[in-house]
Image (cartoon, rainbow, N blue to C red):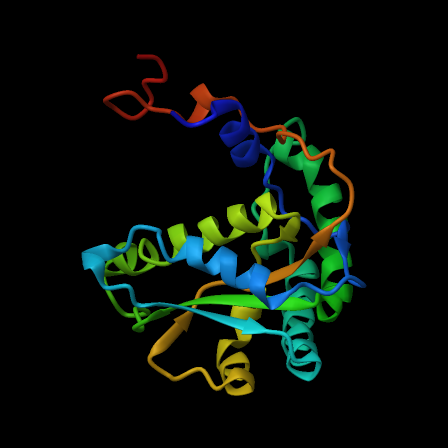
Length: 219
């Protein structure tokens, strides 16, 4: 049986790491390979295994991706309509200033992350129906999250970012990604500093858990 204490700690303390990424410490390629070996054990729709991970260590290409990310972040940060809004008393509203500050820091320093990892999936689904979209994303997101968990277990921090996808075609040109391949995220990867990661404050579980019918929050 799994050690539930260790497993639960990994699952509940794998945070989006931004300000605590150690940009000065190199990340061995073998460590990335270990994480990818674990990622490729994730479930995949119809056993298609159409996933691809683009690992970017070249400084010039990282800077090019970071420039795209920064441009997209500036648009995101200066357009409130891009972000969901909640009541002032809502937990998410209270957390937002800290999140924006952390995200701003990452946007400024993205190029310094020693490794960028872009999880991709074969196929384009912009015009596809909900079933096709769910199947395609359901075939890459578990693998991507497994990569992040494996990285955390090895002392590496990551952050799930998607803003560079505003400029996906430009990113594809930088990396030579074919037109039929969909990029799904961009992970800056680096060793993290400190060891005091802890569970985040989240909305109550019962609030968004529905038993048998929508709105029934108790079993």
